[in-house]
Length: 160
Figure 1 (tube, rainbow, N blue to C red):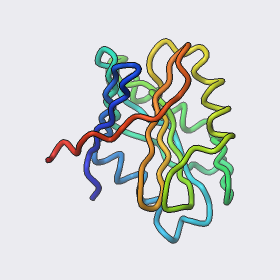
Figure 2: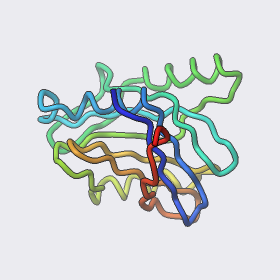
Figure 3: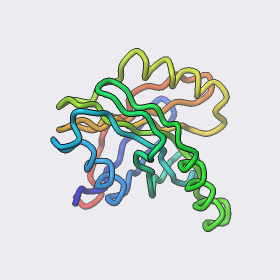
């Protein structure tokens, strides 16, 4: 099982907690058996002031498109799962961002990643979290309207 991790985004003054269940779920798709195709989904969590608590994520679903250098979330099941979390939490848990894998040791955003995120944060009223999972590392970025997505620094594992 993977451990929870905390990232800090100094520009926005945000902390991002990604719970161990979420890091474990994402890590499954960075294993060698999955490394030929990218995978991804949405991040579900709650806002606590400027901070984000990521409590769940979706994984690839049947209608999503996966390739060596892309993941395209197409299945409406992601939205359905997000709505269930929203309803069951009384509106506290919502979609807070997206994640996907890169079939490489290091997780570095591509030009396509950055262009997509730039478009998404144009209207964001709350911090949006973007995670890339590599085989050996996790990259986390945060963006908000008028603040392009930039890297958040891993500051600790809560258990340490």
